Every structure is written in structure tokens, then in C-alpha cells.
Length: 88
Image 1 (cartoon, one colour):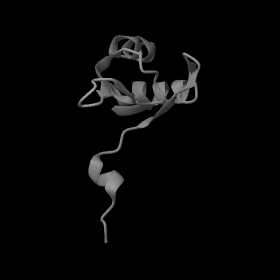
Image 2: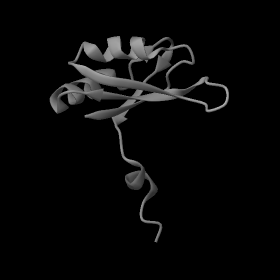
Image 3: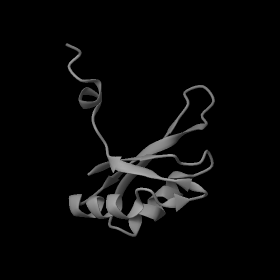
Image 4: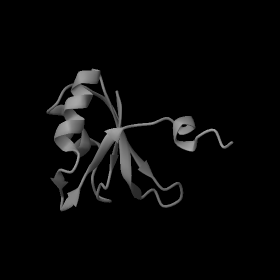
């Protein structure tokens, strides 16, 4: 299950995000999105959990959780075509 994680701090690392989610199951990958030119975090990223049930548990536990004085936004990731709509 792929999960969107928003409202991260600029200094939060992929390893820290992985540790946060690992409490709910096996984490396959973590990717923090960065600016193409500055390489600074854009304050969001994606986590892929090995099992859908683990992902659901992480969603329930982490959405709205205070981490580094920020409330996390945690929800199931949507693919680009789902976000953009049909355009018609």
C-alpha cells in the first residue's frame, strides 16, 4: 500500500519516516520529495508498506499525530490520473 505523508519538517529524513511507520509493519520504501534545484525537502513524501492491513493501521495511528511540532497528514496515495480527473 502506498501512503502519502505530508507536513513533514525540512529536516526529517527518510530513515526517520521509516522508523515512524515500521511500528505498524514492514516498510518497503520511503521517498521524501525534494526540490529539483535546491534539493530541499518539499515537506511531503511517500511510504510503501508491504501489507495493506499494516498500511491501514499506520493511516489510523499517524494521521494528525504531532511529530516535530507538526501535525502529520497521512492518507492513501492517489496516482496522478486519479488526482487530475478527466478534464472534461
